[in-house]
Image (cartoon, rainbow, N blue to C red; front, side, top):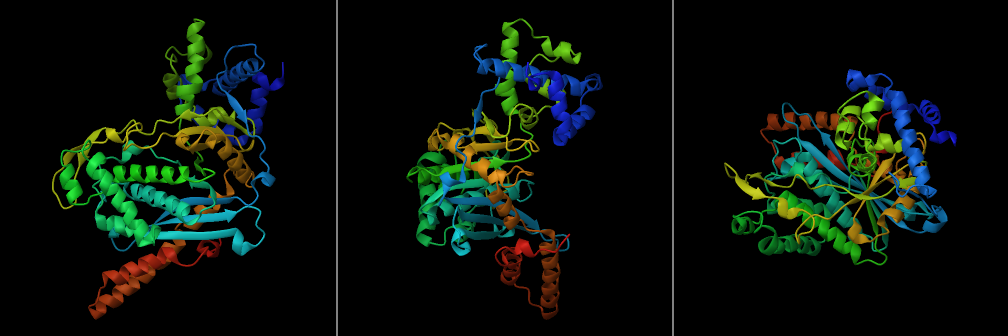
Length: 491
């Protein structure tokens, strides 16, 4: 038997991979005391059993495999010469002024044409500032208020990239392609003025902005608001933009614009350092437990770990602390990616309370019509895990299946190549650049805190305080010049 299929072989590998060894050591400290003894050894035994099952399935010696693995094929830079790729990421900064904490947001885009030797033609940067204090809608008292604004801003950044780049081949977002939207339900709707502030940055052409805004309001009157609220007429009359309904509309616009291109661009979100365990629970361990039930061996894990309650995938993950990235890091080889599965992004979309701008109290709103499958719903999302190198954990790739069956395979090829440029990090280099570019560093906000306080002091002495001037300074604090992150102070 090949050594990598044995318990001893797995233990040797783990001892050589410090990042996995540390994860297992942390888990051993947090699980129940009865599980700590031989936690490392039992994990190696479990992983070895999974590897053997996968190996036997590949050789045709068993009908199914607990994990279907694919190999990245034809990942060669020569195949992607002259492709245009845009990377999107958003950053948030906070400027402390007395007890007030204005929040600044900017979305950065990094566009590159692969293989182009002329620097001026090869790459382009763009970023778009938003001052969250300017917004009338949204529930500013909620901790996730900056996040829902950032999600919308990044979506508009992606739409803008499609608009201004006719030959765009790949659009890549830093983070999930779609977040767990149920957690963002219940925010106060945005006003038309709020949407105009967004569109000033992301759609400089007034015609494009009017079309996007008008398209939503038209759908809202006929299809969106009536199934969500009994105050639909009032919402439309006041030209309100419910954040989740507006976000779902932007996703539908993104997919529609992409489908009208030939070839259809690859649109993907790439997630690092994820604690998700959905794949392990719904796919990997579900197959394992189904096989154990068929063989009458449901006590397999209880005997291994000395317990009596490890009888389901959820119980196993709850008690042992395994995650998708931890398990798959021990099962995937560099250049391999897992089978795709449909990620549950919308289970939290149900009835909730919503307050309208300028009103006291709230009304009931049903968010379930925004689930996939309806005319006004969010899109379905497929995900897979890609192993880039032996020294990093797998990254999660998310795509829209509506854009074609090749989104996962073609996305994995390109993401693997871009990630191999940072082998010690295992993450696409373009997203790393966009992340640094969009980030609002502390030294920048600290410097502008002093500047803002100075201007406030001068204004107070003169009896002149201009909101417009303060906003100009705040915009300057996050706008500055291209690649300002390169000029930050050395550590």
